[in-house]
Image 1 (cartoon, helix red, strand yellow):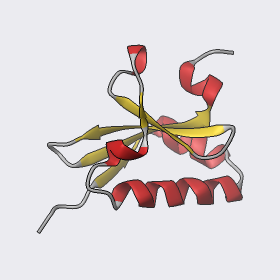
Image 2 (tube, one colour):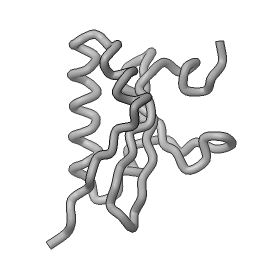
Image 3 (tube, helix red, strand yellow):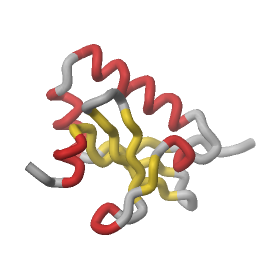
Length: 92
């Protein structure tokens, strides 16, 4: 039997999630379910480089994305941020 993934939301993710409107939170919840149900969550995100090395971004809608990291050994998915493109990359 294959172990399932453990979801580990960061404080920054929780804050960003709480600030979203209910309809967007629903989309984030659906994205998390999709990623957790997969054999390899990395397939659902585009890999980031530079300061975000080893992170993956999943587009929620035109303006919002979810940033996550995966630990294949521990079978954990770290939910890092849910925010706009500019907020992900720290530009203003």
